[in-house]
Length: 539
Image (cartoon, rainbow, N blue to C red):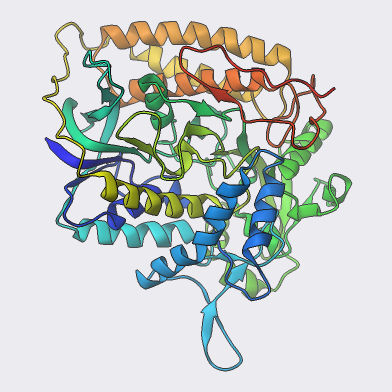
């Protein structure tokens, strides 16, 4: 099988790209499960865009730079913010059912939320299930395209590069895919390959992400020779529902944007002690405040309370959250919501240019798996889906323009299973998976120290050896592939965290609690085969 474009991932970034590409191209879209399953589906808050006359692109850029704590690239922020309104127009034309507002003159306009870190109301949303509205719309249109072949329930094993084939050039020619239902590895060639695989928050014990967020694209790109950057900046969403059966249910930032108050178990407020913006401070500040108070009090959780708002308002603005909490016996119109921080977003990733292209010819990375410079040391709320839309569109334009000179991929070797057997030790995979996620939570979590990072580094090196031995001796499974990728991403996170000898944004170290002078810090960029950089401590 060979295609013009192979897209690994079917979230907002991958499907935007697929729909934006010319219909003349033969496109393959790969999804680890059903087509629309992934982090995009569960995004609640919305998409940030300047659509109000009182707002401006410069204000959006300023808010993004402020949240990024000195590491956001200003030109990237300006590019994304300036293209945001056109992306919203595109989605509206696709009939995504965004929430609207009835104006005094009888017309309607898009209803705009305000979220933490934003100076204006600029969050376009579909009630509190924006990701579902966007992803479902894109999924339906993708299925209707006769030039798009869908590989659902497939997971990428690895990229096929020229170096893997023994050639000197550094070009990607496609990927090996594991058909999870037939348990067979197939070879797919492509003139252009795109990683749209999402983030890596499943590397942590507690996360708001679905099970597929295992950093596959980041790990594959690193093995293929790409640089990665800023992997130490893992965003912990401050408010995940705390309930033994809830697992990963997120309580949207918009709840605080509409007046939700964080409370201690005794009912008292506390955020004003940590930041003058209170509940509307950026996520890293709110997450650290909650973490601090939980540890200080020995509390299992804290509480988010919006019950002082009108019950009809709550039900209309947050129907999904209201209904899901009721399933667990919590009526948010009458009582506060128990919450804890949880790993939510990977701000670093594969280094790309303004088109989403990596350093490997023919290989792109878009969405959460990429590093564009937009998020810096912390992501501004609702800039994530926006980045997917902007870079999915940019990659589509670049691929279409550069497709003609690209030759057809060479004949690719089939996956070789002649020297492996079926595993009789699957317990190794499940044990290593649990161990990895627990020590990452304990040692490389919201607050870090040199000693914790050193412990994590020793453990990941041992796990890497065990996993590689297992990978070389047994037939691949989806669980093994995800574990291998998670371990690779965990190593990259630890190495970046050790390299940054300051506290900034989402990276907080008790050994280096000060932030270097504004403007003097740089991204943490790792290059395969090269020594790790060191970000000096504050003088």
